[in-house]
Length: 239
Ligand code: BEZ
Image (cartoon, rainbow, N blue to C red; front, side):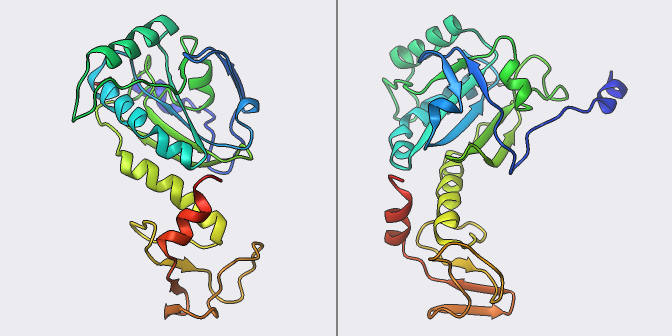
């Protein structure tokens, strides 16, 4: 079994690839992806199974943050290989019965895809047999308004995702796009950003440059610039 798995090569989407298209049933009706999501950022994420504790804590947290994602023009789509009736019953149980870390009456309004066929999960490399052959791992795909995959994060079955980090990555992606800069370790809005070295080419008219006032160069290859939280949020929220 181990040996067979080692020889299996499965095509998985990568950062920079166009997100695979699909049509799927969900708790909010049929989804035609990417057509239905034109002009929006999308976080497509998978979870192993309905009616499991880690997944429940994750869904409650995501649902609790949905407004924040809306403000950042980002739609959430969940997926597991369970069926629609299981999804509906699980989400109803969460709303009616589960109180966790001060969250209660949590209504999951974003769609949860029924992927019993594993059609979507397989297209996105969410089934990773070394971890589980019959359940999706905890995958997170960030897809931009042009339908390009911009970040992929995987967690194993046993560990719930860090939702501060998931949101931070979205804001960092939008900020680095808007200001043509890069985000250093642990970057958060209000922290300095990385400015491309002088002489490198760029497209955005607001592209930062090492010769701009306010740039600090720690060495020729490592220059940073202040970028206020207000400037960042003004650009990346509601866009
Ligand atoms: C959970 O969500 O609690 C879970 C799901 C699958 C395997 C392990 C934990």
